[in-house]
Image: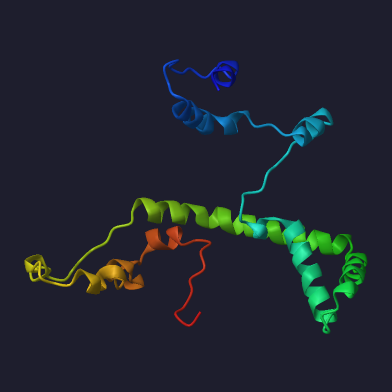
Length: 186
């Protein structure tokens, strides 16, 4: 472990125990992780762009695979496992460059929606304020005899700060640009 840290130029105290060295390595190893495919593509002047994890909506291959699975499910009504490879090949042969172009365009549109609403998430996260307009003087006098298992504060109701009626004007309109609002029925 000390040799790895030294090789990577990471300073450490030689008196550290193995668990401490291991934690130091874990904290730094991502910076030094390399993949053969990166080297191969770099030799051909290509750059690797990695997709964020858990975002199949930003990956046209995932969307194509979803379309293939949907096609197989709709055609394989008798659940014949032996027919699946045939149906997969059939759907792949039906897909053409236009279909791929549509999937890529859909991903670009989703990326644009994310980019347009990203500032909203940042601003709301930074400026989130909970306002309590009710008088809590009675709550401050709670006795210790109350049963803690029946604590009904685990799912608070939204307060007035979460209401749309308090969010009006040009500043709010600029903030909400590119953001869809959902009604209670959705």
